[in-house]
Length: 160
Image 1 (tube, helix red, strand yellow):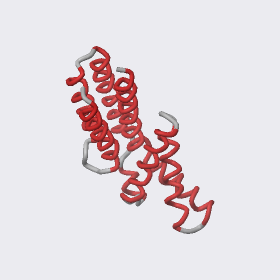
Image 2 (spheres, helix red, strand yellow):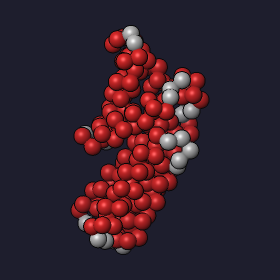
Image 3 (cartoon, one colour):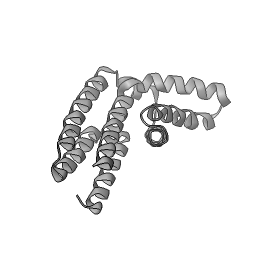
């Protein structure tokens, strides 16, 4: 696989990660399709293992996401801008501190969005708790599984 095609695969993976914040876009399917594209171009055993592992991780993430109540998100009044900011912070946290940094960045983004709305630290903490209860595992499960897939792909692509 050439470096241009590998860069395109990386950009498509980034688009799949950003798609987590867009309602209605199947971000796990996009991430899996990117790994399929890469695996079919590389044709190594490692690539096929990463593809299979990605399918398993994403399927488990979807089960977890469906079990978490999604209605809380709409009822709590979390807007798309806040959600997009939190996902971007989650991706940045994942880059800074792999796997663990994703959820930490998400929470930090929620706090950073809540603080300017008024009330200072206490109000921001309360709003963050409320929002985190509302978001629950729904978005975090999808983001975390997509980040795991992206991380596995990145490690496999770099080491190949």
